[in-house]
Length: 449
Image (cartoon, rainbow, N blue to C red; front, top):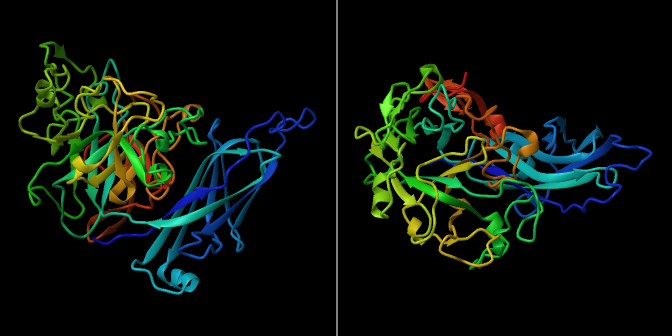
């Protein structure tokens, strides 16, 4: 399978806030100059400057953005930035010829994409510069095409029952879905810091009980509370070029009246707000799993015998608490998702979150997934700029994030169509969700408008 190289960012440390960080009594919130120095990875690319890299500053409180390109010295100068806390993303694309000129050898692909990111950057009169260092990573030919996580109207729609994920074959070759895993990632949902967090507010997984990976626990892995896997013998479920598979939470027609597992009728007042998932390729049914644990089947986890069940590959360490009774996505957008091959998933380690000081029978454990196993990942985000959480995914997987406009609004996030070749749609894939995705009404197997 052909792979495409992209980049990861690392960041300089910033000083903590002080009383005059945002100006003194004489100047208030006076705009300040700020610069971002873009450099290619010093090991792979000798730390060369990035000319013409696009840099975006996003205010974490207001959502306001500033965009500037770096010059020949690699520096992007931002004049008149309002002091505050910002997330920074940087992108750069080189053609094969440009890459050869810059680095002296020809890459395997026609274009090479570069991404970088840095979170929770304080910009004020005392902190006026930072540096992004960029590293390379792979992109796969299977991509997450659509995530319908917001759900539909709580009274007139199907609430959260109509959630689904769609995975697309973006290559020109048939790829078999057998054994493909979807990981629902876990992390902190606020940017507050503590002894067990990184400066961004995200968990410092190196502090988890039993962890031996050191600082690489935060840079080389992600952590999932739930993993589902496509069954098959290896060649059971082909995905043809330009086609996709739909994995439904519940593979039924959510537009039609139905009866839940407790015998209660369910009706949808406005069928146009929801979707028909009765033709999904797979559904996530936990009934058998829960019965094997001596627990009741969740009332809304309705099985459709005509839709193939996903395998429950990881639902927490056996014998410990796992509260989710179904494949529920956070409708505020605080999840992130990855797809990877997990034939050896049982060999992956699992750990409690770093805030846990001692293990009890209610402790949750999260499976550790190596970044080098990940085929694609998408960072979702809270729709309210002032409620956003720290990133779970490293920049080489997703440099930014994407979100719907609200919860229960029938929207999904869709990967954009980049081009059409001989009738086959090729989707955008720069490992930068704010560039690759849009949001519109959920539609299984639909495309971005």
